[in-house]
Amino acid sequence: MLKLASYNLHKCRGMTGPHAPLRNLAVIRALDPDIIALQEVDFRYGVRPEALPRKLIQAETGLLPARITGTSDSSLGWHGQTILMRPHLAEIAVLRRLPLPGLEPRGAIALRLPGLTVIGVHLGLARSSRRQQLARITAQAARIAEDRVVMMGDFNEWRDDRGLESLAGYRVVAPGPSYPAPLPQLRLDRMAMSTNLDLVETGVFAGAGARDASDHLPIWARIKLP
Image 1 (cartoon, one colour):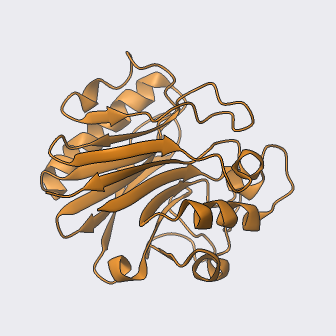
Image 2: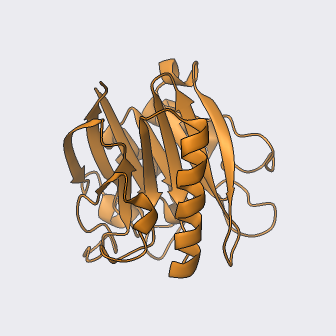
C-alpha cells in the first residue's frame, strides 16, 4: 500500500504572500504521503532559486527530495518540479527528466521504483500545449516504464471531456475541486494511473492550514500494488 499525493506550492507564497515555506511543509507533514509530486518549488526568474528550502524538508516532513541533475545548483526542482519520498524509497529510486513541447518551457519528471513509475507533471496553460505534452508523456511512459504508472500533478485542465485524450488507456482520477484553495471550484489537480493498479481511496486535503498555504489544495490517493 502506498499513499501518493500531488501539491502545487505556488512558490510557498500562499494566495498573496508573504513567502512562508513552513506553512507548506506543515501541510505535507499532516498529509503524510509516501511519495508526493510538487509543483512550483522554485522561484521563476533568474537562476530559479528554491522557494521550498531543501534544508528544511527532511526535518519537517521526514521525506527526501529526488536527486535532480542538470539544473541550477540553487534550484530544488526541474521546471519548478520535484518529488519527495520516504528515505527507504529514495535509496532505490531512479529519476529521469522528460522535456515537453509547448509554447512555454515545461518538463515532467519520472521517478522509477521497482514495480512502479511515478511521473510528476505541471502542464501548460494552453490546451493545445497540454495535448502535446500528454501525448509526449504517455509515449515516454510506454518506453521507460512497465505497466504500472501513475502520473500526477497540476494538469491545468478544468474540463473532464477535453484535453485528456492521450490518457484513454489510463484511469483518470480527479478527487475533487482543488483550486482556488480558499473556495475550491476547479479540478485542476489530477492523477492518471494504470488500470491494473488497485485504487483504494482518494481525497483533497484541506487540513493543517492548507487553504492559506497555497492557491491549490493537495490531492492524494492510496493504491495497492499487484
